[in-house]
Image (tube, rainbow, N blue to C red):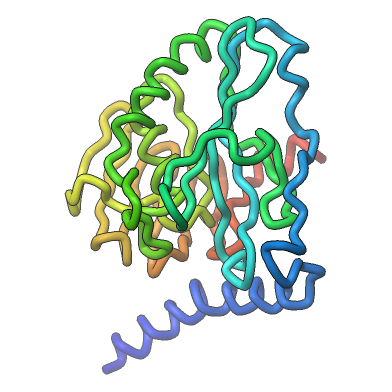
Length: 252
């Protein structure tokens, strides 16, 4: 009985409390009340496509809409072929056909929320990644009407995470609030990703654990991720994300 009480306390302290704080802050914020009221315009965080002839790949994310924005982000992919004067954007959404191309500005706000660049590649690396990226998008198995599931997945974050895992040499990981990123698309409850040096175990996306050099130790409970990484002196707080002392030192 004592063990159960201890586990309950740990769960409340590590997962419920931060999520409740985030929800409270979100509720007090100035958020749009509906899809139609939201701002979807370009946030101008990407350079103009024609500024450089180099190929480019960007992984983007922004807080999603409604109260779920307190705990989760929406992720998407942006790419540009060498010499192209426009970007190409790929998302997955929960209505109609899930996989969408160029439905929004490449760096458009998502439900009025400012996007951020999670990872990027340029030049020869990007040119090498783009054909493989397009193939991974084509091969994404949950691309039919009705395949999308907001929780535990497959959702927009599942899509981006799955595509990224098919790109060895591009070690980008979605932020911890990307609920659905750890959904096991192949149905495997445990796997070892040798290219990324990560061990993953997942109970169908409802709970899981990740252990590796890039992620450290992460525990996922109902889409909320808590973790610690001694390699970059970072902690992951459910609903908020990952904070590194090394990054803080760089800004000091």
